Length: 354
Image 1 (cartoon, one colour):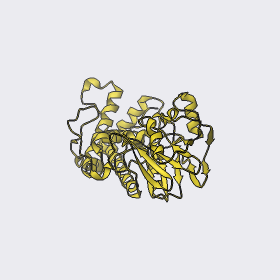
Image 2 (cartoon, helix red, strand yellow):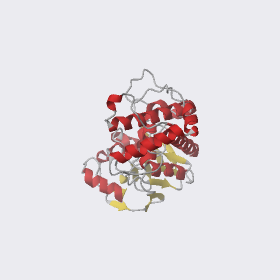
Image 3 (spheres, one colour):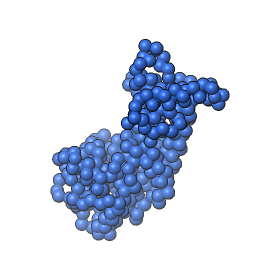
Image 4 (cartoon, helix red, strand yellow):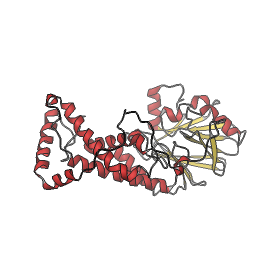
């Protein structure tokens, strides 16, 4: 799809000429508008956060509150009890869960970075076998170690995850044996897990796994407790859908959130922090899309290069976004400088075409 670079609202074009025509008129109106001139004069300066691809000598320090408990390097993982029979496993980059019931164990995700040690983690609690494996979604980095668990567990996933895995034909991600569309209740012994699909955001098939007795929700790649989201809002396929899912999380009755990444569990305070970040970056980019003029390119020799015109415009929008967000967020959220440029580019793309 050709991008919508106008603030006026045309969502798709049959030809690039329509983009140029629309944006030229927008640019002319902005040049004549006192409000636009005032907004442009109030623009923030050049950001001090290095753009994508520029080497950085030292990234910003990580706030202690975002670090979580220390990982024993001799083990390479840690477990944390989340409630009766429910445990977190993490290597500080990734997170998964397992639930112990009377005759077996349910595993939720198997990140390849430590999947070979999940058995060791389970053995530190119980000698019962793994009977079920739940996939949060299809991405390799969360379930690519499933083939190393051994045995023949029942594999449960949402329909869209099953479709994506059939397409991938990856032996390290065995196909699910049980699938569902909207919801599925897994009752094993006295333990209960409620699985639900809220729709696309991060990826089709990405589900919520809720343990009501333990008040624990696992929802992967949506909230990154204490941290800026991974690049481009966790590589969300549907940014507006993703934003809404974060907001909806604040109404969920969980007390502990397993987000699939970083080294600590999350709380509603982490959800509220991400909602505030999402709202702020959306406002910053929306303002930049209006205040930054579309064209001309700095070098007249590039006048016939339509992609150069668009790249220059979106680059200036992203730069303004980064400069706006930096004083507000660099000390509030861990890893701000690692992915803020990515977030600003993802936001301007979404606001223009979604």
